[in-house]
Length: 250
Image (cartoon, rainbow, N blue to C red):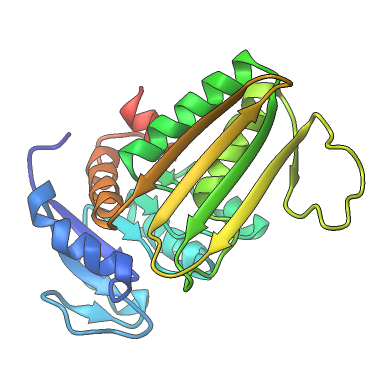
């Protein structure tokens, strides 16, 4: 990783995750040069309501804003040749396409979860799914204010299973499915309650065995630290689409 301090433009700087990134920046060898937020809040750095007002020249951009803002963030990064860490979740197919298109021009890291433990969980889930053909079910729990469901992490884990097996159908609701479970299903279940920061569990079950792989976080600092580490790492990489696992397990 670069030795110099990495200057960051932080999108969504006034939100919970934006504030967590700002708090963790100095410890991770980064400086928040400025922030962008539709509802600017006082901070130790300039915060603008629009990317068009930004005059600072950062080394990388971290986006913890809203998924609909993703294409605008990426267009700004492509225009200025900046690496982008896209940590906002809930993107539509069109917004995901914008991520892929931008990655042909700049390094882009897109992850539903930027914690070390989640990256390790995804790796373990992939290895397990490839090794056994057992039924797979994913449960995710988050705080009552979280907007998107299922979580980006749950979809990341589901994709790890589907990629390892070469296919699989996501099933979100079995209320009306009065039939036996299809072996190719990947069940995804979302719980929203209280102040839960994040918990994910992947259950693999055969006729006689059950294996549970789970990960839980108790604070947002782990996501902030992962985003900052990713931003620093991207500054030394060529254009392309990256995940946290690509950086941790090259």
